[in-house]
Length: 198
Image (cartoon, rainbow, N blue to C red; front, side, top):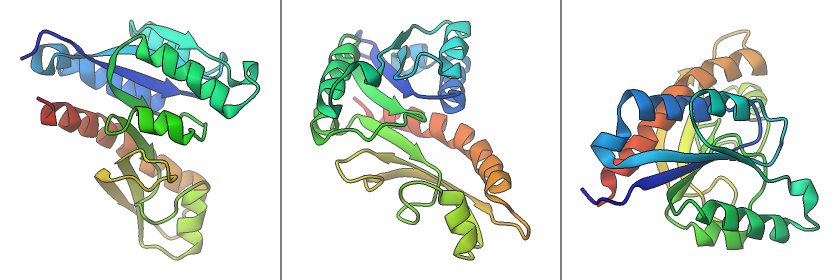
């Protein structure tokens, strides 16, 4: 095993429940010992993101970079890249990071930038995935971990988990059922990515 730690940087905008699931898995499964990997930092574009306190309570370094302080998406992404690169990341994980990233940002982290999306891609890219799955009469819904490319929600699929769509489901009840699977799937997908690295 290489002596260099495989640093993981997680980007959040909200409650950070997927981030917490990954941090918990890293700690409980001792990724540091097994893969030489650790969660280097959690970065949010919102100072009021609930996930920041959650990360701190789990012993993880946190930072805030408000997108509102920048005049353009490109300027924000450039500053964000600089902040992330300070941690020399092997992997950048989007966990409810509610920003459309510029192609320059995506290309900079090509092959080491992953996201979780609350649908069975390629179905239902973008927003309101649960309501759209119900409206389309789908019998199952789910979530997808994928590599991020310049095209929204279209990168190579790394892992998927499905749940049934039940009679009487609302977007809220379906979302809650999918979220349980997200919390299982995302740490597994990150772990599998780490295992695939030399």
